Image (tube, rainbow, N blue to C red; front, side, top):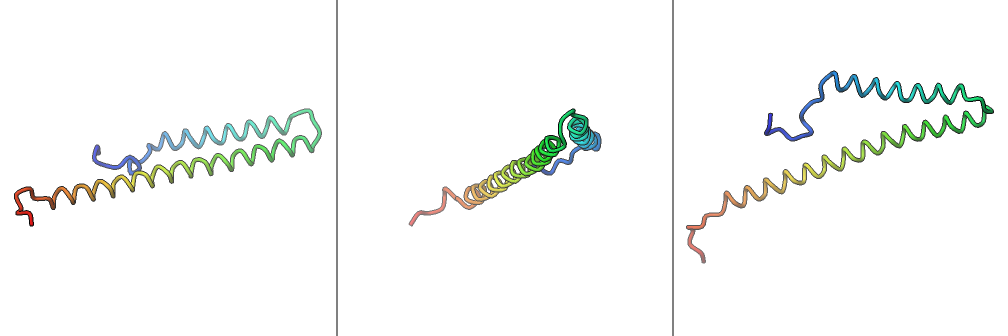
Length: 97
């Protein structure tokens, strides 16, 4: 398993469950807190929109970070393959022209 790229190692089901439970609880408790605030409806709506935008931008940020990591990882593997091919093709005993 040590030879596998980092992105191909699957997460355990416990980790996936913990992250989903954490997300649902954090979002739900925050939404419930906004709902029960003793303020006007427009203030609750404003804070609710802020919560939705925060959640949406968090997903976008997580996807961007993942995509950047995968792109770097793929580029690194391609560069490593090129270097390995050049080393394999190089023969120091081959007569030079």
